[in-house]
Length: 139
Image (cartoon, rainbow, N blue to C red; front, side, top):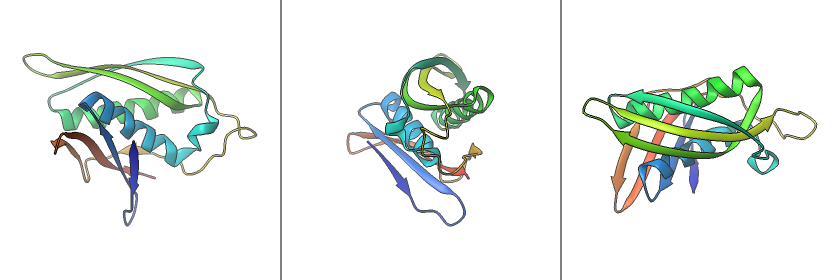
């Protein structure tokens, strides 16, 4: 489950899950739902994503921005995500995959371009047994 939150200049996204991994994946879905109708995007191609950061908050930003980078470089939209997060002595590491397909304006209902995930409104936490991952994205 994910949610789009109103924001004055950009768009805030918030992913919910039973784990941080699930919340990160839902945040990614929220971000790509700003760009296109996700039900039109078939998860046929796969890209592997690997990012590292000192904190879970920085890891969320790295994950979302790496997904945007891969989407832009390969002219694709993603609609399915998997992530595994582990902690070493000094950092968090996320290994994940994103599945989607090449952008086709005749097939995909394109909406607003997302330029990047920002540190504004950044929060990664567990609240009342739910895990959340949220930030503001630049549109």
